[in-house]
Length: 217
Ligand SMILES: Cc1nc(C(=O)O)sc1CCOP(=O)(O)O
Image (cartoon, rainbow, N blue to C red):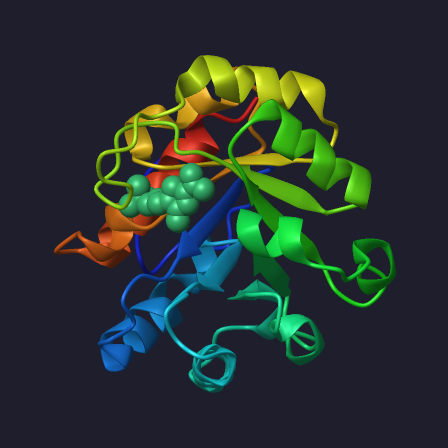
């Protein structure tokens, strides 16, 4: 099956596709690409850790106003818990999660929460706190994580076999990895460079979604 930009963008797949922002320095580009790619994507994360929380919230609002449905938008950061309401959820880095005194159990009644993890133990701790999903990586070499050895498919499989919450794989991922990630037990994948470093981000997303759909079943 060929997924074109005009057609078939509403195909559903049980394997989640997360697209994470990077260097929204060029906000216009981020918003204009996002409003075209969202039909293929389960979640678009506003990461931008170096920016203040209100800035991330502002960008989430701009995505929404440009036509991206609110239930596809995830805002990163512990400070967005209140503000994230009305969007799909919030995502916390490991440091925020392990240092936070907030009770996820209570927050989850109001909002979906995901946490980044880098080991089986971190994944178990996140699950015990009641998070909705974990993001595990980085799986492959990634320019976004220079100088840090990738954790690989074997560790991914260990994490997937240990926790019951969905494990979303991240780090150096492209269309060619979808089947291996699924075989390891991942329930989705997340990408930065594959989209934002591409000269043709819309084609990159549709090809990724096509690989996911073709790997179903
Ligand atoms: C944001 C992020 N978190 C990771 C983790 O391991 O927690 S790896 C990563 C970068 C992923 O970027 P790319 O798709 O460009 O490799």
